[in-house]
Image (cartoon, rainbow, N blue to C red; front, top):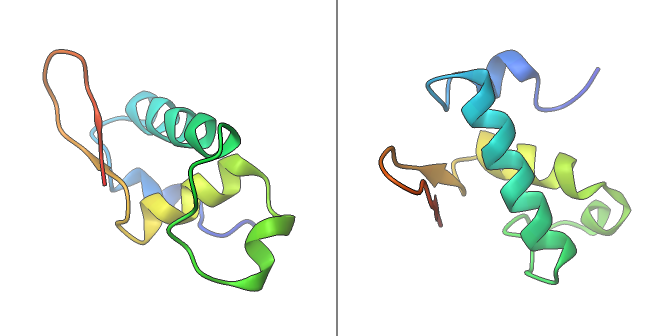
Length: 73
């Protein structure tokens, strides 16, 4: 089973599409070299999208609606 579950993080956004965009943008930041907000030894072994999903589940990453939605950290 995946952690966090899609049902858990689905509550963090108004739609699953918003959630996908949010996770994809954060994953791209991680790939581009931004450090993860999650501190543990397993982070280096995880895929960027998995790290982004964990950060969303733990409320490290949020968003606000409006023109040009931006990540809030």
